[in-house]
Image (cartoon, rainbow, N blue to C red; front, top):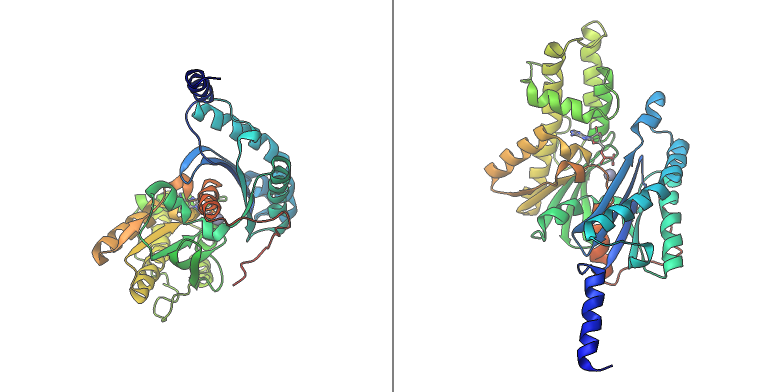
Length: 363
Ligand code: KG4
Ligand code: ZN
């Protein structure tokens, strides 16, 4: 083949393949009650992000039933994989098949062990079948990467608040893969507390969005809800006392929550002001104590407009940089997993097929 025809052939191939896509990675997250899959090209180009939430499947039990969660993940993960490939193909302008993947990432901790194993089995099967690297991801480490996804490179060191239904954590990150937990809830997570209080007012899971709406649309009434551990030194949180305070508040008023929104709104707004004040104050304290100038928030509660507004105001006043992801990337999603996986893959950090699942954080 002469030079001219070689050039023509490669041009034809490029045209056939559509836009250049580098390192397509499939990311899977099944750590709790969301089945989430994403396909990323490189660190930040989200070609597909699909999530199926199980809230309705567990509603009659008043909480997530681990066995049921695993079964549901198993039921939906393959149709979701097909949907993710189709969505990626649509965005790329050409069909995307499993054979186009160069890596597969999966959250292998922390969470419900049976649920994690569903995602891991699919990920390992694909890694083996396609002979591509498998990357195990810590779901907690991945949450702040929702910020790297949308804001690009962020200036280290960073303090991250991860505020979700299962975790409330403060993380100090010096660099990629170099981070430590510097504060955590000693009992309920903030999201769990918000969900439980919403339930007392008759709102089903997830209660966060409705409490957030109350906080945005109603002024906080003159109620004195505690700010747990705010006066205590240190960076740990406690939210179970705040939930109990609401229980006593309702008991003292006859047991039943106020029926109409005009009455309930100011109560829930005052309650959320307490949650928000503690989260904002402790995160800013963490930045002060560590000398860090930039903070991020992530996790489902970070989707709260009221919390974001309060963080924005406090950070502006303190002269700190503040980053938060769009709401869809605050709640559990596999795109954040894919973003962290891209950094790990570039650094040569991947795992063997003997990757294990862990229900808890190792520290
Ligand atoms: O990160 P996430 O989806 O799952 C866990 O890892 O737990 O967080 C779920 C939590 C729940 O407490 C839910 O009520 C809360 O995030 N949440 C919100 C909003 N969306 C979800 N809280 C306030 N405003 C929202 N828009
Ligand atoms: Zn999460």
